[in-house]
Amino acid sequence: MKITPLLALAGAVLIAGSTVSCKSVGCKAAAPNTLTKAEKAEGWQLLFDGTDLKGWHNFKSSGVRPGWQVEDGVLVCADPHNAGDIVTSNEFGSFELQLDYNISPGGNSGIIFHVTNEGGAVWATGPEFQLEDNVLAADPQRCGWLYALYQPPVDPATGKILDATKPAGQWNHVRLLVTPQKCVHEINGVKYFEYVIGSDDFNARVARSKFSRMPGFAKSPTGFIALQGDHGKVSFRNIKIRSLPN
Image 1: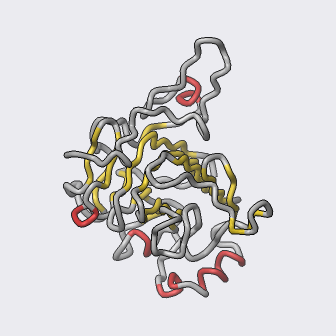
Image 2: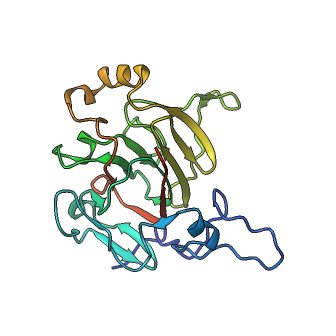
């Protein structure tokens, strides 16, 4: 499979937004899809090792459709018409998730969490951290937002809604924290907002959204992590997670 130059940037090592501390002379950043000794000691685990699709399957399926491929250490939704959403084999409750994504021009994807098999789609039960090309994508919900529920504040420097994303074709770093006390969205080291699932504010927003018609939405305290694969081409690497005490 041939990948366009916009998606084939696997060789570059992400520095901005990295959790690795590298201050000594001669120190090198960790290779993509690996964990440092410090990260292992902190409880991090890889959800993608850069070689295969082990640990993932299509929603309510046992395998992975051919639209998802591994190319040069990158997990790629190369054909959204034959990919579908994939979910982790394991479920997670409280966690910190970090990953790098690279989206095509006009691309649209998402990270959905606390997904269960009770709904007809991953987003029927799990809230979505939106991934998008903010320039050309048609969906008005922008990258880093909690889909249809929360968005960043206005950036005083620009007078526009905060947007820390890099252009399509470049790697961006995501950090998602999910706990009963608070959830946090970050893009490239910039905090967008935080919220509490099940709070009065959260429930009021759900009631005003399309999710009000989905009785299982955001109700489960645990579930699968999903990557959306039916709205455009997108690549992922350095997908790592650590479970946190409730």
